[in-house]
Amino acid sequence: MGKVTVATVWLDGCSGCHMSLIDMDERLIELAEHIEVVYSPLVDRKDYPDSVDVAIVEGAVSTDEDEAKIKKIRTHTKVLVALGDCAVDANVPAMRNPIKVQDVMDRGYTDPETVALQPQIPTENLPRLLPYVRPMHEVVDVDVFVQGCPPSADTIYYVITELLAGRQPDLNQMTRPGA
Amino acid sequence: MAVRSRIKTLKIDGRDVSGHEDESILDIARENNIYIPTLCQLDGLSIVGACRLCLVEVQGWRKLVPACATYIEEGMEVFTNTERLQNYRRMILELLFSEGNHICAICVSNGNCELQDLAQKLGMDHVRFPNLQPVRTVDMTHERFVVDRNRCVLCARCVRVCDEIEGAHTWDIKGRGVDARVIPDLDIDWGDSPTCTSCGKCVNVCPTGALVVKGQPSGEMIKRQEFLVYLSEIREARNG
Image 1 (cartoon, each protein chain N blue to C red):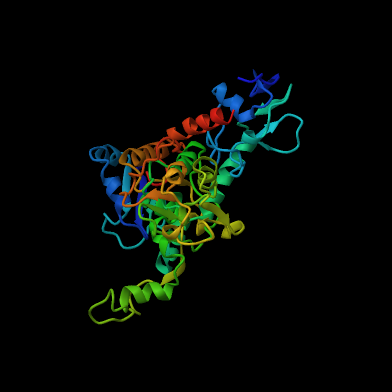
Image 2: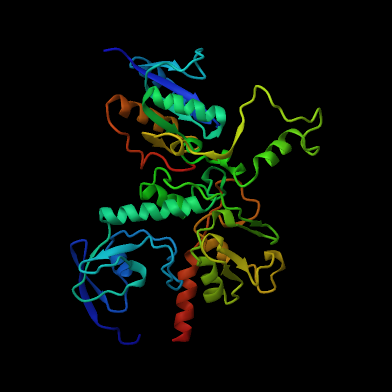
């Protein structure tokens, strides 16, 4: 039997969950005997593969690009893991939700209080902000929810090894929102 | 001590237990180390039955009842942790989360929060309802304390402790449904309140990061509630 293919994805998050993933340290070497990372910010591959066994996705859905990405990932993935509070409940990125998108853009790109040079709203090559930042499960079906900001390396290791053993991870005692 | 009331016998989760007729299902459950989740209830304060997390099933009763606000009855059979109750409790928590802006990661009460603890204890691994994105206010006008209404669950502990223990009655709840919020006096800035004694009791009984001491780093706001039972017992003794 071949290795289990794994993708890791970074949507609207701080990459802290990926840091936590790397924080598994030498256990990564052990996992590498069973899994093959086929797509990730840590792997040089541009397009999402046609078929992936497990996708571990960090971050909330904030832009049209995030939305298109997560929909494509869902179609080509067997098990989708929402990794961390941004993916599970939109967390810090969702703090812009009570504010209008235009006001968010103005604050970031044209407000003299925050922008000193060349105030302008970018129109090209940047993903468009959606009206609301949403947790992943409001856009696609999610199979495993891993709370935590970020979830600990132990939690992530547990999730991966449980999935490898063909079990649904029971995370109740392992993590919590904000942990 | 005055003559106590009658003794009643009942079953909780199949166990034979007994208590005085003026005790609640929650009292008896706790005496027997049977866990029933609570949020608005706090020993030393009056009972309001606001959060509904302590709902239990009673054999032959059609409605679920709050354990904190229901007296025991002779022969009653109580079930505290059925699948139906677990589902409802998770749903109540999810509704509380979806109705506010509870972002645990950046909260001063992270790690010391009763709402967060309940989410873990009752197995809430995500919120199935869309967040209502309410616009709620933060009042930092008080010299020492902050009220962050984004994190308020409307348990009314602050209202009760201020009224019943401190005797100031600075806090109240204004508005209904999703617009309900805690207000000092007649909805003025907390710092301008002529009734607030700055005792900090409301801060210490608040189960979440809604009422906190100013200038706390994230995750370092620890509440102290030991004083409450002590104070209410003294008061009770003095009033006979």
